[in-house]
Structure formats: C-alpha cells, structure tokens
Image (cartoon, rainbow, N blue to C red; front, side, top):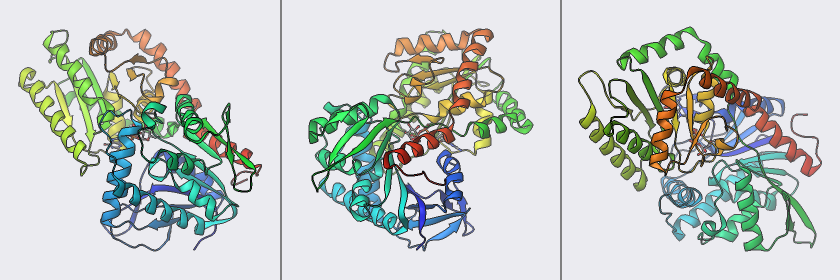
Length: 470
Ligand code: GDG
C-alpha cells in the first residue's frame, strides 16, 4: 500500500478502462485541477473503476497512485443507483423528482462509505491530507476521522444542499450531518448551500455556528471548529481557450452550421440527460415560439446534446421517453425537408466536438431547475474567444452567482423564458460583446486551479498545517 501525503477520495477513479485492456484518463476538470498537487505530494486517488464485480490491485498512472474500490453489482444497485441517485440526488435538488427512502439502500450506503474510508485510512501517510468528493461519500469524513484522527480532512459537495424544510425529510438526517462534520472544511458551491447546511446542523444537532464556523463537540468534552463555506468550482479555462483557438475546431464549427442548413441562429443545450437540467422547459418554450410564429424553423434551430446518464434508474428512463416524445412532436409539427426544429443527440461527444458546438452556437441555453454549479455555462463562455454569443442562464444554477452578465431566467416561468430567448436571438453584437467580455473575465480569473488552491489553503489553515505539497 502506498503512503501518500495527499489522498483524494471520489466515487470514481479518474480513469476509464479502455477496450484494449489499459487505462485511459478521463478528462474531467477535477483531475486537471488536482494533478499538480498530486505530483508534488505523491498523491493517491481512491475510487471505483466503474465496472462491478472486478477486483483490481492498486496501480500507478500519470504519476498518481490509483487505489480501486471494488463494488459488487448489488453495491452498485443499492449504494450508487439507489441511495446516491434515487434518494440523495432528487432530495438535494429540491425534490424535482420524488426521492425514495429505502432502508436497504441506506444500509448499503453506510457499508460502502465505510469501505472507502478504510481504503483512504490505509493509503494516507501520518499527518496527511485527505480530500473527499461529493454526495456519494457523505459519511466518509466521520469514519475516516475515527480511524485516523491525525489526518486533515476536507469534503467538497458538488451538488446543492437543500433548505432545511426539505432536508428534514431524510430519515437519516442526523447521521448524514454527523458524517459530513467529520471534515475540517466542508465546501459548497454557493453561500446559500453552506447556509442551508449550517441551519440543518443547528436545528438537528443543536451545535453552535458562528459565521462559517461550526463548533463540533468531541468525545473528551472539548470542541473542534469545522468550517462550512462556499468554494465555487470552475473549469480549466485555458484548455477551452486553446481548443477554441485551433483552426480545425473553428472549421468544424463552420461545418456544423452548414450541416444544419445555415440557420440564422443556432440555440444550443448541452446536458447529461437529467431531470434537474430543465430540458423539457427549454423545449416547451422553443416549441411555443415556433407555434406563435415568433421564430421560423428556417431561421432558428435548437441543437440539444443530451448525453446518456444513469440509464438503469427508472426516473431517468421515463424522462428520456418524455423528452423524445416532445422532440418528435415538435419536429413533426414544424420541420421542413431542409430544416429541423430540434436536432436531438442522445450521445456523448469528444471535447473537441463540444467546443466546436460552443463556437457554432449563437445562444447557449442553461435552464437547470436546480444545479450545484453548471460547468457547461462556464465552458461556453471560456470558448467564445470572439466575444460573441449569448448565455441564457437559470438563476437556480450555482453559476448564476458569478455570471451576472448573462441573461438570467427563471425556467419555471415559460413566458419569461420565451421572452428571454427572443431577447438573446435579437441581441445586437455590441451588447453581446460587452456581456461576453465581462463573463469571460470572471471565468479566466477564477479557474479550477484557483478553486482547488483556495480550498486546500483553507484546509491547511484550519489544522494549522503547512498545506499539501509545500
Ligand atoms: C455535477 C453537478 C457541478 C456533457 N456531455 C458531454 C460532456 N459533458 C460534460 C460537460 C461538463 C460536464 O460534462 C457536466 O458538468 P455540469 O457541471 O454541467 O453538470 P453535472 O454532470 O451534473 O455535474 C454540477 C459539477 O458536478 C461540478 O462540481 O457543476 O452542478 O451537478 O464538463 O462539458 N463532455 C463531453 N461529451 C459530452 O457529450 N466530452
């Protein structure tokens, strides 16, 4: 077993099994952000390799120690698809879909979280730092502290933390709060999420909170202060800029426009196919604009990339059926031989193609009903090196706190959404430029590396340590 000064614990390892038998790095922003820290401090990453029922020995890739956690098919069903994605995910996204509370799922969640904590406890060097990621692993901080009180423990929550009235539905609400409070720093996307968490702690556990500090009583009668604070995540902006500058990708953007019949305006949506993303609201608004003749199918096309997600969870199967029915109806009513209303793609594309799409799109529609941050909004902005294009952004996405120069919408207000889409379609180039420059400045000045630096220095401060890699 490796002994690492810095350990990341996430549901997934940052690599995918490639068909030729090796490992391919998955290109997420998190890996990019943590790579420098990983290299400097002999980092290790604990996570699931993505395939059930396989035991894989720890191995090294890209200068990182990878420590696979094996999950059985039953673990995947109960801990991952069940408790994580059918209880916590809908509850934390304001019950857009109904959460299901099943004791069997909870028991599996506890057991699997314990296994992740044990693996991290074995991997971490004396006095090391462990950074736990996301809602699948909310109990890991507590289990890990019990096993290894010498460690400094951080936790980052990528999704929203709901208001107390909703959170209190959770039959295991106390245990989850106690799990999270095992961390020294608990990071959230928005100030509001951190506030919701602190309120739940006050109401459920009766612990005292002051500004961002929470006093956590210890067994020996002393107290420890945990920090619950917003650290909005971002993207690796320079890599998007570099892709957008590539001539082949710019040529591809032109080609996409031609393939769509050179419409005057391309509207774009890019989401995992998830009920939180407001894909149906977006389509309803667009369908009505066609119906009202405020837009013409010859002039305006909506491209919707809906990448496959959680396909074995029932609610996602239903959502897919509903969306595909809506697309079929709208296209059936408005398509002409040469033009389509909605070009719907239930596929995942390489990053190069995504950036070509961002460059081809005049208007980016991010209409999430609830979203921790929404990185697509930031990727679109970073890619617009021409300072053109309009971002329509839901106020219920975390990104709205930073991207105030976008056109902010309430996606539940279909009339308002329709009017905002029209405003985006008709926006003069000068106004586009002014808004886009300001949006791009924010994303460039606060990229994913700043995010991880800020989180890790807060963590170092709480424990009075020197910080990882220093
Ligand atoms: C969670 C929170 C928070 C999508 N389709 C393709 C593709 N993508 C990429 C996007 C983007 C990422 O997936 C999606 O990130 P989001 O932030 O939009 O949403 P979630 O997946 O729900 O992520 C969210 C995030 O965690 C980080 O903290 O912002 O609120 O829900 O990077 O570009 N990428 C490629 N092909 C696709 O077809 N290559």
